[in-house]
Length: 317
Image (tube, rainbow, N blue to C red; front, side):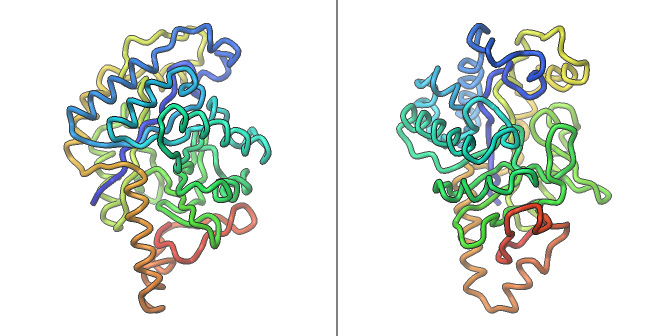
Protein backbone atom coordinates (compact mmCIF):
# COMPACT_ATOMS: atom_id res chain seq x y z
CA UNK A 1 0.00 0.00 0.00
CA UNK A 2 1.22 3.48 -0.84
CA UNK A 3 1.57 5.78 2.17
CA UNK A 4 1.86 9.58 2.20
CA UNK A 5 5.17 11.30 2.91
CA UNK A 6 4.86 14.95 3.91
CA UNK A 7 7.05 17.85 5.03
CA UNK A 8 5.82 20.88 6.99
CA UNK A 9 8.02 23.66 5.62
CA UNK A 10 8.71 26.25 8.30
CA UNK A 11 11.91 27.65 9.76
CA UNK A 12 13.36 26.64 13.12
CA UNK A 13 12.17 29.82 14.85
CA UNK A 14 8.56 29.55 13.62
CA UNK A 15 7.59 26.46 15.57
CA UNK A 16 4.90 26.32 18.22
CA UNK A 17 7.47 25.38 20.87
CA UNK A 18 9.05 28.84 20.62
CA UNK A 19 5.97 30.97 19.96
CA UNK A 20 6.05 32.47 23.46
CA UNK A 21 9.76 33.36 23.42
CA UNK A 22 10.33 34.45 19.79
CA UNK A 23 8.05 37.25 18.63
CA UNK A 24 6.70 37.16 15.06
CA UNK A 25 7.80 40.78 14.72
CA UNK A 26 11.41 39.58 15.06
CA UNK A 27 11.28 36.89 12.38
CA UNK A 28 12.71 39.10 9.63
CA UNK A 29 15.77 39.87 11.76
CA UNK A 30 16.64 36.17 12.32
CA UNK A 31 18.98 34.45 9.87
CA UNK A 32 16.83 31.96 7.92
CA UNK A 33 17.82 28.32 7.49
CA UNK A 34 14.65 27.01 5.86
CA UNK A 35 15.90 27.18 2.26
CA UNK A 36 19.13 25.23 2.88
CA UNK A 37 17.31 22.70 5.07
CA UNK A 38 14.52 22.14 2.55
CA UNK A 39 17.08 21.72 -0.22
CA UNK A 40 18.71 19.05 1.96
CA UNK A 41 15.34 17.29 2.24
CA UNK A 42 14.92 17.48 -1.53
CA UNK A 43 18.35 15.89 -1.96
CA UNK A 44 17.47 13.13 0.49
CA UNK A 45 14.24 12.40 -1.40
CA UNK A 46 16.07 12.39 -4.75
CA UNK A 47 18.61 9.95 -3.31
CA UNK A 48 15.76 7.72 -2.08
CA UNK A 49 13.68 8.05 -5.26
CA UNK A 50 10.48 9.20 -3.54
CA UNK A 51 7.98 12.01 -4.07
CA UNK A 52 6.30 13.86 -1.23
CA UNK A 53 4.04 16.77 -0.34
CA UNK A 54 5.53 19.99 1.03
CA UNK A 55 3.01 21.85 3.22
CA UNK A 56 4.61 25.29 3.07
CA UNK A 57 4.05 28.56 4.91
CA UNK A 58 3.10 31.52 2.73
CA UNK A 59 5.72 33.49 4.69
CA UNK A 60 8.39 31.11 3.37
CA UNK A 61 7.08 31.16 -0.21
CA UNK A 62 7.02 34.98 -0.24
CA UNK A 63 10.69 35.15 0.74
CA UNK A 64 11.98 32.11 -1.16
CA UNK A 65 9.88 31.71 -4.32
CA UNK A 66 12.70 29.89 -6.12
CA UNK A 67 12.56 27.18 -3.44
CA UNK A 68 8.88 26.59 -4.14
CA UNK A 69 9.64 26.36 -7.85
CA UNK A 70 12.35 23.76 -7.16
CA UNK A 71 9.95 21.67 -5.08
CA UNK A 72 7.41 21.64 -7.92
CA UNK A 73 9.99 21.08 -10.68
CA UNK A 74 11.33 18.03 -8.85
CA UNK A 75 7.90 16.40 -8.96
CA UNK A 76 6.71 17.05 -5.42
CA UNK A 77 3.35 18.49 -4.41
CA UNK A 78 3.17 22.06 -3.13
CA UNK A 79 0.43 22.49 -0.51
CA UNK A 80 -0.59 25.13 2.03
CA UNK A 81 0.47 25.33 5.67
CA UNK A 82 -1.11 28.75 6.27
CA UNK A 83 0.65 32.10 6.13
CA UNK A 84 2.72 32.39 9.32
CA UNK A 85 1.96 29.33 11.44
CA UNK A 86 -0.94 30.96 13.31
CA UNK A 87 -3.14 28.24 14.77
CA UNK A 88 -6.58 28.04 13.23
CA UNK A 89 -8.37 28.25 16.58
CA UNK A 90 -6.75 31.67 17.16
CA UNK A 91 -8.63 33.05 14.12
CA UNK A 92 -12.26 33.68 13.31
CA UNK A 93 -13.84 32.48 10.06
CA UNK A 94 -13.10 35.70 8.17
CA UNK A 95 -9.44 35.72 9.18
CA UNK A 96 -9.13 32.05 8.20
CA UNK A 97 -10.53 32.76 4.73
CA UNK A 98 -8.06 35.60 4.29
CA UNK A 99 -5.14 33.44 5.49
CA UNK A 100 -6.07 30.67 3.05
CA UNK A 101 -6.44 33.00 0.08
CA UNK A 102 -3.22 34.92 0.72
CA UNK A 103 -1.18 31.75 1.20
CA UNK A 104 -2.59 29.93 -1.81
CA UNK A 105 -2.00 32.90 -4.14
CA UNK A 106 1.61 33.23 -2.98
CA UNK A 107 2.35 29.50 -3.30
CA UNK A 108 0.76 29.24 -6.74
CA UNK A 109 2.59 32.32 -8.02
CA UNK A 110 5.91 30.94 -6.76
CA UNK A 111 5.46 27.32 -7.80
CA UNK A 112 3.42 27.68 -10.96
CA UNK A 113 1.16 24.83 -9.85
CA UNK A 114 -2.33 24.60 -8.39
CA UNK A 115 -2.58 24.22 -4.59
CA UNK A 116 -5.36 21.85 -3.52
CA UNK A 117 -4.11 20.52 -0.16
CA UNK A 118 -3.96 22.14 3.27
CA UNK A 119 -2.49 21.32 6.68
CA UNK A 120 -3.30 23.53 9.64
CA UNK A 121 -0.33 24.76 11.68
CA UNK A 122 0.08 22.55 14.76
CA UNK A 123 -2.88 20.41 13.61
CA UNK A 124 -5.15 23.16 14.92
CA UNK A 125 -8.44 22.12 13.32
CA UNK A 126 -10.43 20.55 16.13
CA UNK A 127 -13.74 20.82 17.97
CA UNK A 128 -13.12 24.55 18.53
CA UNK A 129 -13.24 25.26 14.77
CA UNK A 130 -16.50 23.81 13.38
CA UNK A 131 -16.38 26.40 10.59
CA UNK A 132 -12.91 25.47 9.28
CA UNK A 133 -13.70 22.42 7.16
CA UNK A 134 -16.72 24.06 5.46
CA UNK A 135 -14.51 27.04 4.51
CA UNK A 136 -11.88 24.70 3.06
CA UNK A 137 -14.61 22.95 1.08
CA UNK A 138 -16.00 26.26 -0.20
CA UNK A 139 -12.49 27.30 -1.28
CA UNK A 140 -12.21 24.16 -3.41
CA UNK A 141 -9.55 22.27 -1.49
CA UNK A 142 -9.41 18.58 -2.39
CA UNK A 143 -8.14 17.49 1.00
CA UNK A 144 -6.99 18.62 4.42
CA UNK A 145 -4.50 16.85 6.69
CA UNK A 146 -5.10 19.07 9.70
CA UNK A 147 -6.28 16.71 12.43
CA UNK A 148 -4.17 14.89 15.00
CA UNK A 149 -6.61 12.32 16.41
CA UNK A 150 -5.16 12.14 19.91
CA UNK A 151 -4.71 14.12 23.12
CA UNK A 152 -1.61 16.33 23.31
CA UNK A 153 -0.73 19.33 25.45
CA UNK A 154 -0.36 21.57 22.37
CA UNK A 155 -2.98 20.17 20.02
CA UNK A 156 -5.24 17.21 19.26
CA UNK A 157 -8.80 16.08 18.63
CA UNK A 158 -8.98 12.73 20.44
CA UNK A 159 -12.61 12.12 19.41
CA UNK A 160 -11.78 12.42 15.69
CA UNK A 161 -11.55 9.40 13.39
CA UNK A 162 -8.09 7.85 13.06
CA UNK A 163 -8.34 7.58 9.28
CA UNK A 164 -9.72 9.55 6.33
CA UNK A 165 -13.27 10.90 6.54
CA UNK A 166 -15.56 13.42 4.88
CA UNK A 167 -15.91 16.36 7.30
CA UNK A 168 -18.58 18.20 5.28
CA UNK A 169 -21.59 16.26 4.09
CA UNK A 170 -22.08 16.52 0.34
CA UNK A 171 -18.68 18.14 -0.27
CA UNK A 172 -15.70 16.66 -2.10
CA UNK A 173 -13.27 17.56 0.70
CA UNK A 174 -11.49 14.71 2.50
CA UNK A 175 -9.83 15.08 5.90
CA UNK A 176 -6.84 12.76 6.23
CA UNK A 177 -5.54 12.78 9.83
CA UNK A 178 -1.88 12.14 10.56
CA UNK A 179 -1.19 8.57 11.58
CA UNK A 180 -1.06 7.60 15.23
CA UNK A 181 -0.41 4.24 16.83
CA UNK A 182 -3.07 2.67 19.00
CA UNK A 183 -1.56 0.88 21.98
CA UNK A 184 -3.60 -0.54 24.86
CA UNK A 185 -6.52 1.68 23.91
CA UNK A 186 -4.40 4.86 23.75
CA UNK A 187 -3.42 6.84 20.68
CA UNK A 188 0.27 7.68 20.43
CA UNK A 189 1.89 10.19 18.04
CA UNK A 190 4.66 8.77 15.83
CA UNK A 191 5.58 11.54 13.37
CA UNK A 192 7.55 14.77 13.59
CA UNK A 193 9.50 15.21 16.82
CA UNK A 194 8.03 11.99 18.18
CA UNK A 195 9.72 10.11 15.34
CA UNK A 196 13.07 11.52 16.45
CA UNK A 197 12.52 10.64 20.10
CA UNK A 198 10.85 7.23 20.04
CA UNK A 199 12.23 3.91 18.79
CA UNK A 200 11.74 3.49 15.05
CA UNK A 201 9.91 0.24 15.71
CA UNK A 202 6.94 2.21 17.08
CA UNK A 203 6.58 4.30 13.91
CA UNK A 204 6.81 1.15 11.80
CA UNK A 205 4.18 -0.43 14.02
CA UNK A 206 1.81 2.53 13.48
CA UNK A 207 2.29 2.25 9.71
CA UNK A 208 1.58 -1.49 9.79
CA UNK A 209 -1.52 -0.83 11.89
CA UNK A 210 -2.84 1.59 9.27
CA UNK A 211 -2.04 -0.74 6.40
CA UNK A 212 -3.65 -3.63 8.29
CA UNK A 213 -6.84 -1.58 8.47
CA UNK A 214 -6.68 -1.02 4.71
CA UNK A 215 -5.62 2.61 5.19
CA UNK A 216 -2.56 4.57 4.05
CA UNK A 217 -0.26 5.95 6.74
CA UNK A 218 0.32 9.72 6.82
CA UNK A 219 3.82 10.63 8.00
CA UNK A 220 5.26 14.12 8.49
CA UNK A 221 8.41 15.91 9.62
CA UNK A 222 10.05 19.37 9.30
CA UNK A 223 13.17 20.55 7.45
CA UNK A 224 14.68 21.98 10.66
CA UNK A 225 14.66 18.46 12.13
CA UNK A 226 17.66 17.46 9.99
CA UNK A 227 19.65 20.54 11.04
CA UNK A 228 21.63 19.84 14.25
CA UNK A 229 23.61 23.07 13.79
CA UNK A 230 20.64 25.41 14.21
CA UNK A 231 20.78 28.12 16.92
CA UNK A 232 19.74 27.31 20.49
CA UNK A 233 17.07 29.42 22.22
CA UNK A 234 18.42 29.85 25.71
CA UNK A 235 15.25 31.27 27.28
CA UNK A 236 12.87 28.62 25.93
CA UNK A 237 11.14 26.32 28.45
CA UNK A 238 13.08 23.15 29.21
CA UNK A 239 10.33 20.93 27.79
CA UNK A 240 10.34 22.91 24.52
CA UNK A 241 14.13 22.66 24.24
CA UNK A 242 14.06 18.91 24.86
CA UNK A 243 11.37 18.41 22.22
CA UNK A 244 12.96 20.65 19.64
CA UNK A 245 16.66 19.82 19.89
CA UNK A 246 16.82 16.16 20.94
CA UNK A 247 18.31 13.71 18.42
CA UNK A 248 18.46 16.16 15.51
CA UNK A 249 21.68 14.50 14.38
CA UNK A 250 19.97 11.12 14.11
CA UNK A 251 17.00 12.32 12.05
CA UNK A 252 18.37 12.03 8.51
CA UNK A 253 19.51 8.45 9.06
CA UNK A 254 16.20 7.44 10.61
CA UNK A 255 14.36 9.00 7.66
CA UNK A 256 16.40 7.07 5.11
CA UNK A 257 15.65 3.81 6.90
CA UNK A 258 11.93 4.58 7.21
CA UNK A 259 11.65 5.51 3.55
CA UNK A 260 13.28 2.23 2.50
CA UNK A 261 10.90 0.15 4.63
CA UNK A 262 7.63 1.36 3.09
CA UNK A 263 6.02 2.53 -0.15
CA UNK A 264 5.62 6.34 -0.24
CA UNK A 265 4.00 8.97 -2.43
CA UNK A 266 2.49 12.44 -2.51
CA UNK A 267 -0.58 13.30 -0.47
CA UNK A 268 -2.66 14.15 -3.53
CA UNK A 269 -1.96 10.73 -5.06
CA UNK A 270 -2.90 8.97 -1.83
CA UNK A 271 -6.08 11.06 -1.53
CA UNK A 272 -7.02 10.11 -5.11
CA UNK A 273 -6.74 6.44 -4.13
CA UNK A 274 -8.90 7.04 -1.05
CA UNK A 275 -11.54 8.73 -3.18
CA UNK A 276 -11.45 5.86 -5.67
CA UNK A 277 -12.12 3.48 -2.77
CA UNK A 278 -15.02 5.66 -1.66
CA UNK A 279 -16.50 5.64 -5.15
CA UNK A 280 -16.23 1.86 -5.21
CA UNK A 281 -18.03 1.61 -1.88
CA UNK A 282 -20.82 3.90 -3.04
CA UNK A 283 -21.43 1.62 -6.01
CA UNK A 284 -21.52 -1.62 -4.01
CA UNK A 285 -24.59 -3.11 -2.34
CA UNK A 286 -26.02 -1.27 0.71
CA UNK A 287 -25.17 -4.19 2.99
CA UNK A 288 -21.57 -4.31 1.78
CA UNK A 289 -21.23 -0.52 1.98
CA UNK A 290 -22.41 -0.57 5.57
CA UNK A 291 -19.93 -3.30 6.46
CA UNK A 292 -17.10 -1.30 4.90
CA UNK A 293 -17.95 2.05 6.41
CA UNK A 294 -19.20 3.02 9.86
CA UNK A 295 -19.83 -0.58 10.92
CA UNK A 296 -16.10 -1.27 11.11
CA UNK A 297 -15.30 1.79 13.21
CA UNK A 298 -12.80 1.11 15.96
CA UNK A 299 -12.94 4.40 17.84
CA UNK A 300 -15.22 7.28 18.80
CA UNK A 301 -16.42 9.85 16.28
CA UNK A 302 -16.64 13.57 17.01
CA UNK A 303 -19.98 14.48 18.52
CA UNK A 304 -22.39 16.32 16.17
CA UNK A 305 -22.51 19.27 18.54
CA UNK A 306 -18.78 19.89 18.37
CA UNK A 307 -17.84 19.20 14.76
CA UNK A 308 -18.95 19.21 11.13
CA UNK A 309 -21.06 16.27 10.03
CA UNK A 310 -19.10 13.08 9.41
CA UNK A 311 -20.62 11.40 6.36
CA UNK A 312 -21.51 7.73 6.68
CA UNK A 313 -19.58 6.77 3.55
CA UNK A 314 -16.16 6.80 5.20
CA UNK A 315 -14.77 3.55 6.48
CA UNK A 316 -12.66 4.29 9.53
CA UNK A 317 -12.41 5.95 12.88
